[in-house]
Length: 102
Image 1 (cartoon, rainbow, N blue to C red):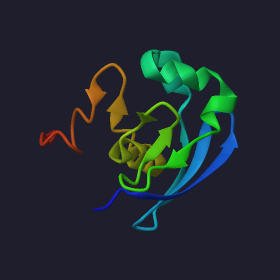
Image 2: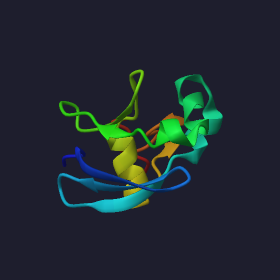
Image 3: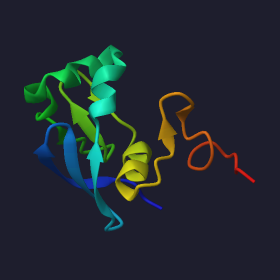
Image 4: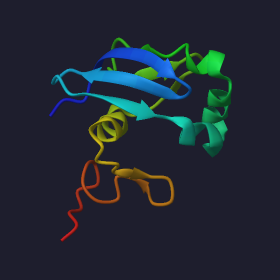
């Protein structure tokens, strides 16, 4: 499975419409990132957030200053599998962890 992003369209607020290399599409709401702090604190400025681009080599979203989000996380969000939870960290069960929940 490839998770490279081939198209991004700003929708509204912190919502982006993504298209992936395998043809999968879906909206992602990145508003939780803005309240997470750290490098994502910049997302609270919507003008900054709208500067999103696709990194040409990594196939993921990036913003000025080196801010990016793993394409696997974005794929899970766009597909509605919600395999990323702030309280548990990335992919506690399934993608990327090698741990299958029985």
